[in-house]
Length: 326
Image 1 (spheres, rainbow, N blue to C red):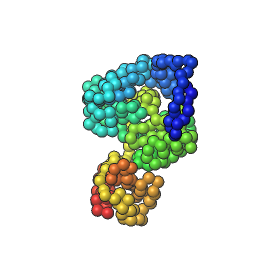
Image 2: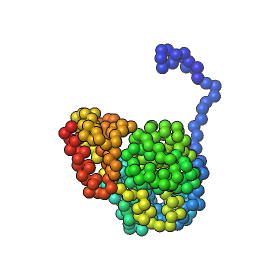
Image 3: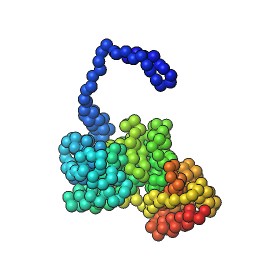
Image 4: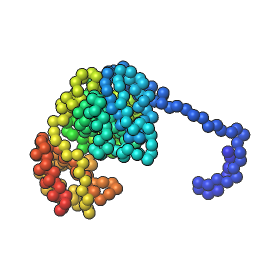
C-alpha cells in the first residue's frame, strides 16, 4: 500500500496493492521440540512416572507431544486442556493451595516427580515423590549442578533472595555464581552480559543460555528428569543435599513508607554487612535477610534464611517488629 502521512501516526490516500496477502497455518511445535531436545537429549530420561498439572494453560499444548519422545517415561496429566477461565484452580503454582490436586495425584499414582506449570508455561514448581514442593532455590541448585558437570567453570546466575546454598552448590561444582536483582529484565540482561549457562529464581523461573538467555519451564523439567535418571535415587533424597538452611519464603507487610522502614532496619543492623543491590540485604554471618519494596503496592517484602527454624523464627519476628514500627 502507498499513502500520504496526515500528521503523526496517521495515513490517508491508501491505494490497493496489486498482490493480495495470504493467511496460512503453521505448527510451531515440531521446531520447538527440536530446539529443546537439542539442548537436553530425550534419551537421557529414563523410566520415570511423571505427574503434570498444566493448570489449563499453555503447557497442555506441549506436554503430550513432549512425552511422545520421552518413550521410557509415563505421563500422568492433569488439567492439560487450555481454558482461559481456569476452571480448576488459578494457574499460579507458587500458591500451595493450587498444588493440592497435583500432590494428591503424585501420592495416589506413586509418581517419581510432579510438576505444576503457570498459565504461560514459563514457570514451574516441582514436587517430590512424597508430594513435598521444592523451593525454587533447590531446583536452581540441582539444575546448576547438571550444567556444571558438562561445562566446568560456567557462570550461573541467581537472584539475591535465593538460598545461600545455591551459590555454595555452584562453587562446590566448580562454577561461578553471579548474584543479581530480582526480576526478569535484570536476570536476562546479566545472563547476556555474563554469557551464563543457566540462571534461576526463587519464583520458578529458570533461564538457559542455550535458549537465548530466556526462561523455559519445559527445559527445567527435562533437566530435572535427566538428573533424576542419572542419580537413581528418589527426589526426596536427592534434594536433601541442597537444603541445609531454613528459609522463610516471601513475607509481605503493608507499610505507609517502605523507604523509611528500610532505613530503620538498616540503622538497627548498622554493625552487620549491608548491601543495597535490591532493597536492603543484611548478612549476619550464619543468617541473612532481605527487605525490598514492591514496585506497584505499598508493601515491603521480607525474605530470610537461618541455620534452623528456631533461629529463623526469631530473626523474622525481630525484623517484622522493626518494619511495623519504623
